[in-house]
Length: 301
Image (cartoon, rainbow, N blue to C red; front, side, top):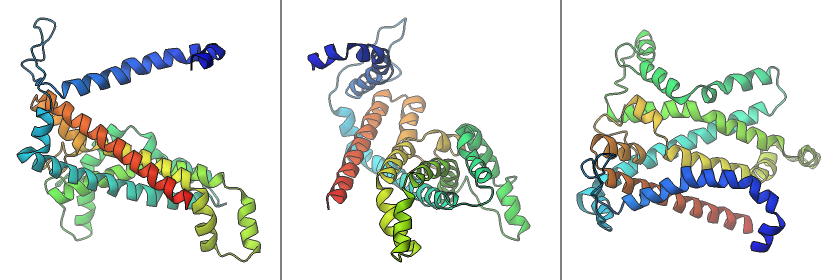
């Protein structure tokens, strides 16, 4: 290791500022947050520039509070909603993104214009889109209910009914997220050599057979990376839910990351909030490891 550093001294010097920055803004706060999860920190003992911090080390007490008894029921309820939120969003991101990528990969008139228009949801800042969708989901004056009434239907209680509220935030996030999948898959499709399709066509393979035996195998690594990133980003997505429903009604749209925020800044249970943060990190690491192993096993077959 030391020999490699001496041999590539210039390269390591160039990346040293980036490593120091990562250490300061990522790893130090991460380790500090993990430490806080083993304390009893709250608004009264956290300290400030005038008062010395007085929180104490309490070991695994926060984890027992979250993962046992009444806390466990609360945690499992929010975890269930997080799973519904994450996998429903990623499913529709994948289906819409892959379908549109397949269409845009063909030689059609105005393809560049379609690509630009379909990228608009991704280009607009998410908080602006969230406010716009919140207005459209308004029960009395929202655009969607106005259209429904014009068509002879009753308006929907988008933001006051638990099921419709979750549906509303999922619709918003699907609209925001599918362009990333589309661009990623389009890049993967365009990297597949055309010779493979030409050879398959000569051999009499149908379009479906080409898709099944050429497109999907060639896209496997792209699909893996895009879906893994999609799961991680969606699992941790805070802005859409908080800005549209604030986790309501009756906590029916809370996910783990928004629930941790409520614990920290509404209830001032800072140590318990960091405990949720550590649990979120652990779940995502476990999922990434399991997902990678499954992909490796499928490639070895």
